[in-house]
Length: 164
Image (cartoon, rainbow, N blue to C red):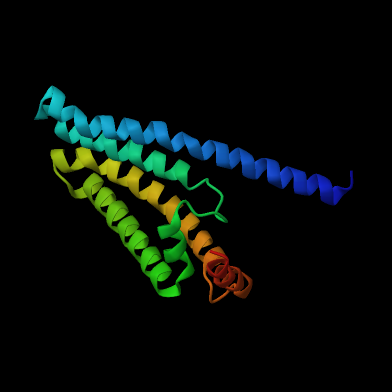
């Protein structure tokens, strides 16, 4: 086995490892959902602590989801958005705005907020960090899928409609 073959096998193995690790998003998202539902079952006296934990677990789940292969899309809607330069740019802008809002609110809550706001602050920071990882993956997916910079993908996409 040559050095290039070993390097290719190692890259494929690490890509598979990250793809498998990305499935850890599901238990964390389920935990986040459980913390969102918890006040409805146990009373609203701990709602801020529960929302904090929900955002924290959602951020971890979103962070794990960013480990997926950026060369694939999850569904047809994602593919259409990522192939269109305007729609893809808007999506990146929305994610970036959510990151700034979440991180900014969380950090401000840590230093400036009262007791209730500071209870949500760490959850907002965790959510923002997870979304920051998602932003990095979304940018990579957008660059890979956009048709205006990848003429070979545009030709394949155009021919696929003729086959149907």
